[in-house]
Amino acid sequence: MKRRAHAWLGILEGSFLMALGILFLQSTHVAVGGITGVALIGDWLTDRFTFGQVFLAINLPFYLLAWHEKGWTFTVRTAIAVTLIGMLTDVLAQNIDLQLDAPILGALGGGALMAFGIVTLFQHNASTGGFTVLVLWLERRWQLNRGIALLAIDALTISCALWLFGSELWLSSLLVTVVMGSIIGRYRQQNAQPQLNKAAPLDAPEKTKAAQASVPAVKTRAI
Image (cartoon, rainbow, N blue to C red; front, side):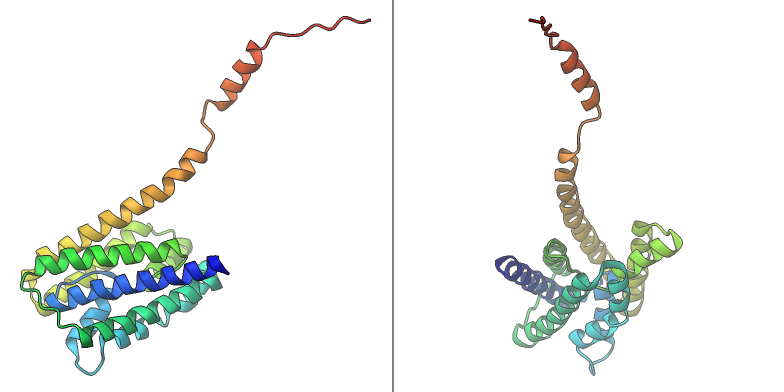
């Protein structure tokens, strides 16, 4: 029970960090890749729908893929995280008038907060949904490289945003990508390190044989 409560608190924490990071990007019109970038474009193009509504609607088709690729637990937690991110982003936008004159500040703050939010969700078997799940399916179905596919989708999303809203923010958009990539990449390296430490060394069989050879043979005399 305590472990489950800890997981849900972690999902709430990750969702809040994501929402706060998105607020930074909203205030400076800095583009970002992924499903978040698509939702931001939809939010900027129309006043009829909020970011949260667009974010929730775009993620709906990906839940079936998430269940197929990762199972029910991951899908339910991801759906709850997506709902929380959408709701919290709209609530924060309505109650906090964040005005940043320098887009680079929005890129640094938004990129770091979103990256830490994604890492927190990963640690509790959840995600922000969207293209990450799609890429996993494409990799399994057609053996596409996961990293290249995600990079292509992010590049396409950011290019569309820059084309629609002006290319003068390209440096800030690139900075968001670099900040998020470095933080999430460092988490993945740290997460993989314990598994490497647990693995047996390659020279373990030789060391075992050498140890056995160094033990003197004990001769027993029949009585």
